[in-house]
Structure formats: structure tokens, C-alpha cells
Image (cartoon, rainbow, N blue to C red):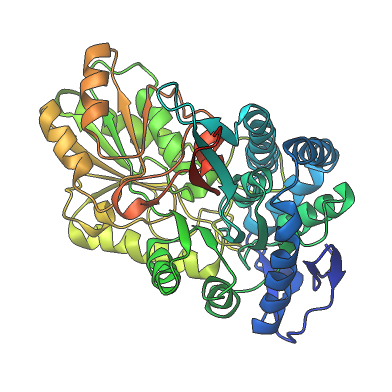
Length: 478
């Protein structure tokens, strides 16, 4: 892929004012695959100025105009679907089939979903039959800073860019500097679709310089960020100085509660869901809680399943997993695997080092620890790699207590055929989402968490409303 040095500002590709560049590394080969520029304050100022100028007209554009442009964008996205998937494989190591179906696929699904919700959304409506002269008006929040991660690049970009467009906001997107290539393709698609200049702007860069310049900029009205809890706290501090609106989707340490009446595939399905995307998902079920009467059987099944789990070249077809994103992330995972061993957890599969035959690239062995307790670091830290911690429980109440004993609260999982138990446990789990028996969470369901897992919700109608302020008008019909 050719070097990507240009930024998209005010409806055109521009040469960055910053002279700093960074290499984009293919995590499967550890080799440079592209070069991007790192935006400085001047680049951010240009992008924010363009967005602010465009806001004065785009905020009052018709719903029909926005729908028309988003539908054209969806058609253009489908034409470049394979290019987007290829870019994601290259920049963050998602295997070819996974990148095509899920990584690029979820971006398309969110775009299509927001078009549907926009068509049905009422931006003006009465307060209610009891108050006929009271009106509610939903208005765009303004100029938005959209900061996205590397692990699900197009999924997270579309969860922010599409509702921002649909609501009438203008924006500056800063994708992760580790995986910026798919976002450059999206900018090309937006340019091809001919959105008004300044509605969408792309500035590449890192968090320390570009991200800080964006989140502290006085003309930014809203920040939507997905990433680490640590970075989310720093962004909140920046935003608090002038009361910027903030939406944060942060980390997770999901518990997967497997009761003795779980379906026959529950154990293996839970491991797959943990290992998928090389464990680089904030909503992964990384703590498996197993009812004691089937705990020994579960551990044996996990050992067999994990030892046969394939890790391989992301450029080939198949159901395997690829590398993790970077050397830094690889080293962090290795440190935590060793920490688990030192803490006394029982290593039943995987472990330190790279899989056999994959010495080049940031590949990690799918790893399972048994006999973990919730005080161990591997049970409390978001490892963000294919590492599963397994622990037993005796009662429903104990399982709920263990699941909730975490600073996070993004997604928890329940495996049981008892419908009443599902309802009891789901209500008591302190998380924004609960996945039951592998049903999954719908593409338009509100995505977000409790506690340190963030503030606000993405996707569907809730995701659209994140970019809107509500205004009450009395005497509308007087």
C-alpha cells in the first residue's frame, strides 16, 4: 500500500503542516506497510475551523439530504468492501475472512442501521398530549472530535462518523495511528460521495499530540472516544475545562457464567469468543465462571479445544486468529501470562512465547489458566490478548458476586437453559450488555458499559441521540 501522508480537510486532500511521520507496521511481518503524518496543533486548528464553518449550514440541512448522502455512501462502501477488509488485515492483522465478514461487515451494518434510524427519527415532536403547546427539538451537539481505536477500526469509526453525520454534526476524525489505513479509504468514499466541505475531516496522529490538541480545542463541542480507561480519564479532564460533551466506550473484563445446565457447546463457544480477534475486543468474555459440579470437565474440554486452536497468517483464508497489533501489546500480554504463572494460576494450555512456526510477527499462543481467583492480576486487568481465566463457583449468588467484582462493566455472558435464572441473573449483573447462550448483541442495540467501562451508548437510536441536544420550547402553538 502506498504511503498515506495527506489529511482530508474542508473537502479536499491537503499536505499536513506537520513534518513528523510514523510508520504503520504490519503485525504479521513486523515490517513497514505505510507511512502517515502525525498532525500537530496547526493541522488540528485547520480541521476544526473547517468543521466549525461547515456546521453553520450542515446543522440546518434537511433530514432528506442527509439520508440521500448516507445512502450514496453505503453504495460506495459496498464497492470498496474488499479494499477496506484488505487494509484492516494489513494494518492490524485480522485474518482475511474475519476482516471481510466481521471487521468490514460491521462498518457496513452500522451505516445501514443509522440510515434506517434516521429515516424514522423525529427531530421535532410534542412533549405529550397533556401539553400540546410544548415542543421538543433535537439539535446537533456541534463540532465533534471522534477518536477511534485500532482493534475494530471500521466498526468503531462507523459507530461515530455515521450518527454524527445523521444528527447534523460536523467532525474531525482521528483514527489510531496504529491502524489508520481503513479510515483513509473511508475518507476517500466520503469525498467520492460529495458531502459538503468541512462536514467530515480526517487528521492522522497520536494521542499525546494530535489527540490532546483535539480534545482541548475550544471550538470542539463534543468528544466521542473509544479506547483505554486510562486515556478516557485524561480526555474527561480535558473536556471538563469547558464542559465539552463526552461519550466514552472503554475497557472490559467480561464474565461468562456457565451453569451446569448450559448447552453442549457453551464451553468451546466461550473460549472462541474470548480468542476471537486475537482477544483484542473490549467485550470479550475473558473470565469463565464454571459451576463446580462440571468444573473439571470444563477444564479438560478447554485444554483440548485450545491446544487445537489455530493461529496463522492473516492473509490466508480460514477460521484461525492472527497476530496482536504491536510489539508493545505483545510484550504486555507476555508479562501478564508470566504474572498468572507466578500468582499460582494453573496453566492448562498455551503460555509464554510464540506459537511454533510463527517466530516472525506478534503472534500469541491462545492461553487458558484454571484455578484463578478474582484477586489475581490476570482476573482484574484487561489483558487484550487471547488469554482466558477460569474459576469455579458453587451458587448463583456467588457467580453474580464474582462477575460484579471488577471495576469494569461492559458485557457479561450467561449460559443456562433455565429461563427464569436468565432473567434473575441478567438483572443483577452490573454491565451495559448481557449475552445469553450465544445469542449475541444486535447491531443496533445500545453498546456501552457501567462503571469504568465508559459513559454513554453507541449504535442504533441511542447512538444517534448521543450526538443530539434536546431543547424544550414552551408556547410553540401560541
